[in-house]
Length: 174
Image (cartoon, rainbow, N blue to C red; front, top):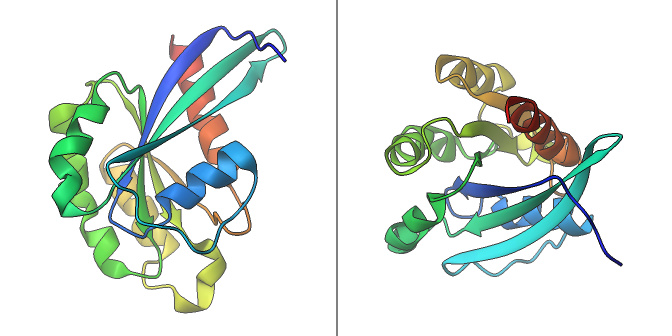
């Protein structure tokens, strides 16, 4: 089957280890969840074409980066050419939220200046274990001029909406 698309947008997914970056990618590209995941070594890649309006489709090339400190120098090079970044934290682990400042600083240093950045609070399905409130995430996003979504890669809640919303914003700006 052949697909035609108006644009190709490169997305990068960043954040601490085990916040669900690979699960978000898998849920978005394959509409499935895999509970047991090996740690990402370096970077993984996925793609999906989505319709942005009746006549146009956009192909998303999504780079899922390793969250471990030992891979940080490798992942920095993947910012190059990215038009959108998903900055992911785990709502059940406060320190992953606290580390967002460092991730955002690195991103702003190495990425395209006008890159669209989406803050993603993942693991919404674990509401009873929540350590970061929705309001805290929203406040961080507002303060840093980011788009904000809470998602569950497990149940797929807001996963497609997150990617689609960012894509429509970028598409309308192109």
